[in-house]
Length: 84
Length: 409
Image (cartoon, rainbow over all chains, first blue to last red; front, side, top):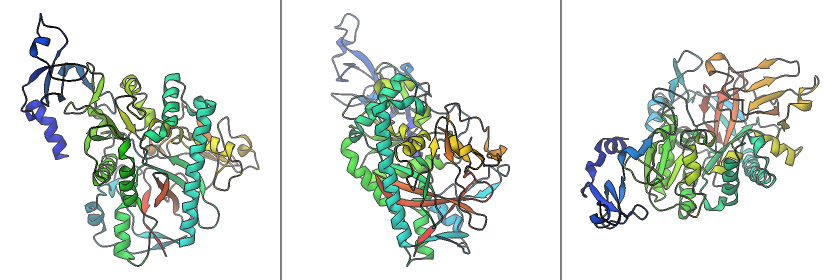
């Protein structure tokens, strides 16, 4: 639990990779940053946080695009899900 | 089968808590939340080896019959009788069943009525999110070693759980296996049960990550479920029932990207979706229809209690198809007497809108006022152990039941 909590609090600071990289949104392969820039090919999309050299993982294209809370209980409510 | 009273170990609470049973003493739902010993070693049950060997055969046969019933439901498309009316969900469940060899399935628990004199009778199959696992697997075994080191126990849960993950790990997609519990359970039982299964998977050599269901994210750009580190969740064990998953806000996304084995999607869920057909009281009626008169089954129907309600009949228990912990069950005896759980058990109507199964009333055995139900475990399709929960205040086993250990000798 401590580990989970630490990860929750650390946000993107656990990554030593650049905070944003241009990647192919389908394969997550790192592209030249021109692929993401205005006037470039437009094939790439900026990817934030995460890790990996040739292929990225553990990050997000847009933090605002990640929605949470779509499973489970609203905060403060209570009802076990196990048992039967 | 006999029940014996015994003086508990003086340090029993600290002992079982140190073995992972942090909910050994929990808040009593029947007593305004006062302290309630869930782990109860002031008594234990004794079985003979022939009794257990016979029960093991019953369990494995019931599991096979349940699989045959699921196959029947898929082939005949009787999903609506299970409350599955969304054609898209029905298609997912059917495909999950057809590809069942490609999706890991770990465990389930039959609840059986048995008193040592007649055949065990099936009450229900908790095949999706069974709990009371830790106490059955660990503290019960350590209790045996402390108190009756020369006796045996119906218990190979821990070894079988590890072996099950080992046997099925080739079915998992790349990346860590996530273990998800819901924060809705404030007693800690769900979280600890999930942690225990996670530990078994780690011991089987799997890389794992724990997460709360509430923290699972949906990345709208990649169209993938992600964890708190934004890693894709390629596979997840969830202690969270399928009928809730498919009603939650993320249900559409879940069905959009579900992996039914072989990389057919981006998130594979364990237990798999076909378990919806086993962990539903409608299974009881299908089992009886396909195996009428089977000694380990009780007559059960979906369209009403039929002859069970006759004045000279046996009476019946009306069970909500998706009820949990005894909630919503109504026992109707031949004289018309009705029994439900008391008010403390919560709104009796919170389950049942999805329909009911009407099963012949079969009273729990009575050992000096104590009414045990046998929780017989199945791991990887085989009989794996026993946990006994007991009530003394209700003919319906409920969330205030106590767990008692057992021996074979």
